[in-house]
Length: 321
Image (cartoon, rainbow, N blue to C red; front, side):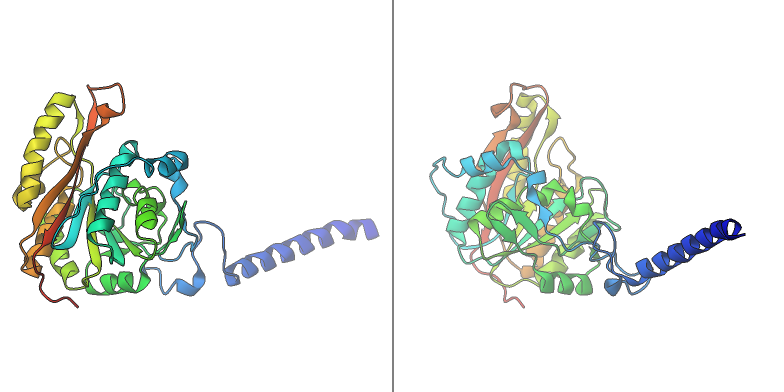
């Protein structure tokens, strides 16, 4: 008789334990990667935020040894006069030396910057909306680059930007590649990482730039993260770049609204930047810092990516909030 009772008891005990485990898991916040923190879930329609609070590891985007070595190469530092407001820099780590020079020149020209806003392509169309932002920090070789969380909160409440949990940004090299360079040159600055989908409405992009202009202060710099021509033979790529350089000087939003990968991979961010400057009632002037191409680094001049880096400054800006 006792043997006959053993199996039902075991089964009943197992079922009770399983039920307890389910209830316990629903009541206990999980710290697993990719699992939402219940304290931050307001409803099923709430923004997917705080699924993890771990800093995004930039080792995924860069070669740390090469990153360390690029700073030892000397170059003539370019000092841009006036008030530095924005810049454009490549995110292809192959040309890491160009990125390092850009941020060295940016530091020399605007040493007091405390907030760096990155306008990146949403390379994988991972965002829930056409424009996405997150508030996670980045782990870099020089320490933690903090996200400007109060600014992100203001951005989300004041614009149509979608607040993401940060998972999509773990693979977004348009921001992750630049984060270590920012931390190296601006150790006390904070980052705001924004991704823009290339198919988004250009009117919305311009409106976003206008809205962004009302939120920044005079210690904020807006950086367009962008490579230029893609997949072209070197000769054609360089010809296209000459056109792009001319359009960057004029910040021609009509050109960048139509430009595709044979000229630039983030034209939509330059449309936003044009709206930004128009809202500031500022006339920017462009200083070209570097112009390079992947065939400078690889033995392949048939299928290239090119790079144009520079800084926009103004003589005087309207007062900011």
